[in-house]
Length: 141
Ligand code: 5GP
Ligand code: ZN
View 1 (cartoon, rainbow, N blue to C red):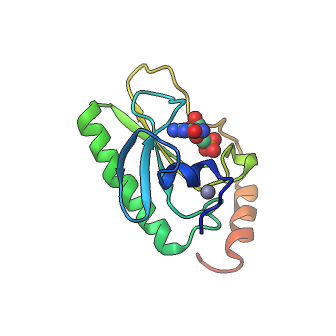
View 2: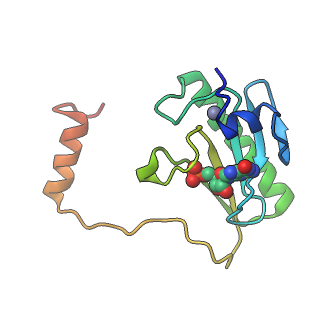
């Protein structure tokens, strides 16, 4: 389903022009208008899913497979030194457009960008508690 009032639905389906790098039946890959670095691109599904929690499993597989392919293309064509995949879900996680997307951010030595977090320092007991909350009594999920 497409959402008329969703800007990424409109871009993904060609209703709003974009600098498209490639497209297929399910996705359009475009340049971000506010790039973190040269070549910052977005993978947009052509159907509306608000975030990863709404994305069906087969779309998820296709989206990340495409991310892998596009990462290689960007590395080859732009000669970047590294690349971050970023995928935000929910306002608390920094998502500003409520239509699932994957950021491909080519990285260059000394590009001045920081994508990261402040490391915490939980005790072993706290880590055990978190693991138990996620996995219960199981060895692993
Ligand atoms: P988020 O914060 O939701 O993970 O990322 C949204 C991204 O979409 C931002 O990097 C922003 O620059 C980009 N963006 C927002 N509106 C547009 C637009 O109209 N066109 C393009 N190409 N990028 C957009
Ligand atoms: Zn949408």
